[in-house]
Length: 201
Image (tube, rainbow, N blue to C red):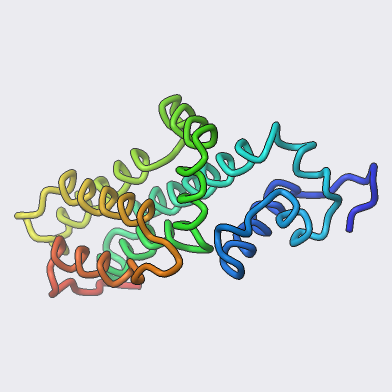
């Protein structure tokens, strides 16, 4: 536990990771400011000294995870011609479901103030689903140019289908829901074809 007055390095990420562990282990109903700081092993007031309130904390957690997925999506450009198209897309689209993503997003949507902060941030240009969609479309365009995606595939439409479905499943998947990953993998296969070939590594 960090003593009062001593700086905690990377405090935001420490609290975010603790929140994800709480949700993964105990379910979304267990997520409170106290459960987060207890899990993080820090002073109870630390969360409120870095965030205006718990709604802001939840919103910032979701935005941070969206931004991380957007970074992964942008890295797809360097993967064109490497590995498999389906495998590369899996890495990005399924990242939305890492570390209790659906439950955390569900909590945010159930808290109007948090949902509003997320919407306003995305509208103001924070990296989110639009950035992921744009990166996926660019990647599919590059792979189509290499002959690894059929010419019949419209990269923009395929990206919209993938990211839109990911968004839908993210917001409607709860702990007792079926695992959304198989459905997304089937969609990837349907969009890019079953005979995707690995080229290079």
